[in-house]
Image (tube, rainbow, N blue to C red):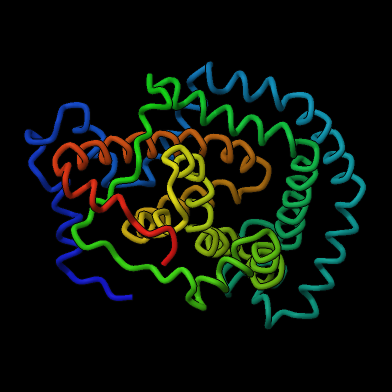
Length: 314
């Protein structure tokens, strides 16, 4: 698929308009939209400072978190020594693969025992899965409530989410049946694909501080962003093709936002908290994106009505 420079200019021109020409309700939104990862930070801030957000989430997850924490602690105490011994054997037998030794990493001295670090990292991942097991249903409800409460806090009802409006003069054409898209959706879009990437392909990177989390977040960026805006697309009743075009036009915005969100969610244990705050940030971003949709529809009513009629399938 090729996109001409004029397409990018048409899209960029919307908010390169001087701020005095942008309606006052949209001026702050237009500045935030320039850097989508900022919404992840906004989500964290709002979750931790707004009692209407953090209290319902904690009340829903409190008891399951306590049970999971007890089981996880017992598991860590009973298996720490065994897992550390296993890692010592693994690292001793494969130094060329890991590039690690007892006191160096890539030839540099480190202030901790690498076997201890790797064991703690592995246990952190295991405890996260234990917490997910106990929280599976409750944390899903907490995420949905966080989205709903964030939207409610902006004072907008269901009528705020209007039908999709195409913002580009010449929107990109997305082949929904391409081999690449079919492969991504079938093998990498589901839980099995993510499991293979994170637990098999990225396993060698997990022994290096932060490397595994960064690589994993990059692979999961677009999928995470799509998942976090699923409720936004549903609220606008967008077709699969409209969603594909919308995300293609904002590919790097969604990748940057999704990378930052996936990075925080990939942190052991505390990533579960960020999975809730990311819903808050995603709702804030959706709110500003919808403001821009209204602005386009009002500025170019005839063109927006025409572009809104995108085919359901490519």
